[in-house]
Image 1 (cartoon, rainbow, N blue to C red):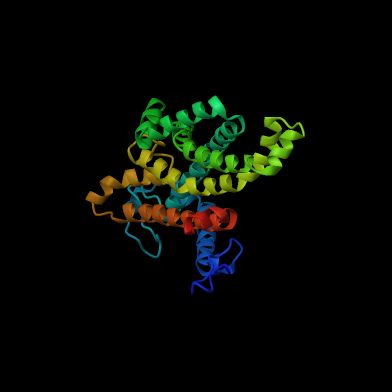
Image 2 (cartoon, rainbow, N blue to C red; image 1 turned 45 degrees about the vertical axis):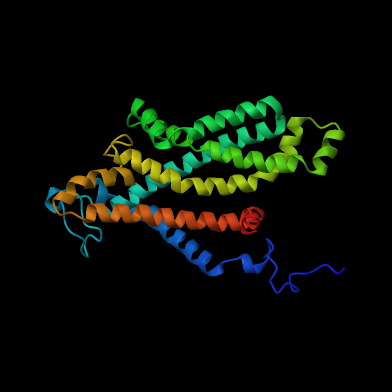
Length: 295
């Protein structure tokens, strides 16, 4: 009996990882352009107008948006167009650092669990489940409250709550690779578990780890902004999106809507851009995972 094909069934075959039908050139191009514009804003604006946010001037305090001050000024007379760029740069720097630390920790735990297996795997996964079960924001508040205003505490509090997800993904990918025939051949040739981990399991999980870094950045941005907004993050003299939003609470009552609107808009735009880049990276670096979800 002849096997039925997708054409016989009147359906189109699911797109393969390299199929152009999987690509979204229009949306990807827009996302990349938005990322370039955002990066230029974050890097160039503070360099071109460094004095606009460093020098306070009560004579120009609480000015509404105009041609002279596109985003208006805050209570101290700082230009918010520059101030928001500085805050966005600080928040993105913290977020990227947290994402890298969380991914490295998750990569180490996931690979170790997959390579050693047995009791080690069980213990590491139970620790991962225990950390993942804790409310992330609550745990972050507790850690940051112990070292209030410390940048190190903020980074640690965010990174320590995000590595379990990476560990689970890496472990799953590593277990799939470990079941392959070439890994069995490596063991038969006398390779140790650590040699298999370094030569086979680690390269197989780097694509997933790369995607995890990008995916964790938006979460880290919101966590840092939330902690700073609650007054537990950076000190008010160090601008970040969270501190700018925290300072704008009183300005709203005085009619200074721009002090809240533009930092909040920057937070939303940065999240959307990074999430779009993460989606594009996922299609590019981890197509097999996407194919499994499509099916």
